[in-house]
Image 1 (spheres, rainbow, N blue to C red):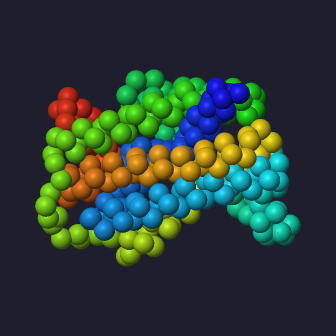
Image 2: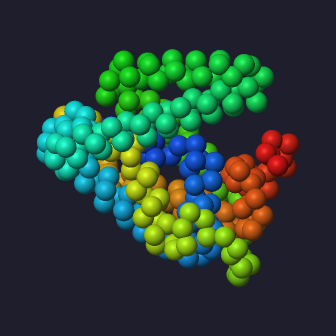
Length: 269
């Protein structure tokens, strides 16, 4: 029983983290806009975001388990009522479809740019993987995240840690010329968590019938802390390479090239 619960906790935590760590997070662009551009104040923003991720993840899972929900429509209806729940359902659906379109486009672009194959090959490969996960239901979703999330998580953390060790943190940052998404670090952290919870709400609320209450709450907290830890590392790495990192579309790739010059030919500018 302990082993089964431990396995479920790992899969649940990986699913939560995987629902948030997308292309924007892994590239470092989201962290740049929401935290790095605020200088060391951005670290306070990361702390606020970590608390919110841990609290909201645990809350969503707790409510989903309490309602025994199998989809996010049930959770939305419970929280907002039938009319507002349907409206948010449609809004979330359009946002999820938009996110899917961006990810498919990115898959095609990566295959075309780095492997030399036509873009449709990457899109088709991504669609096949998505279909395989969907047809396997909750088990497929959990398994896919157990396989993919550690790779993404480890890659981001290793690159960020090496960048910090290579450059070191400056005692004083140059004047911040831009304030990213908003003009306030606190508001920026709240916005960051808000838009990043759209996918986790859709994913986590579908697990209400298959996760024990204690594991659900613990998985939400651990997943939130893991997201905060990763965001902290990327923010510190970005501050180590500030201000030049602000001029790149893929900040993580720029920081990786600072550690390993062999990656420099792949820089976008």
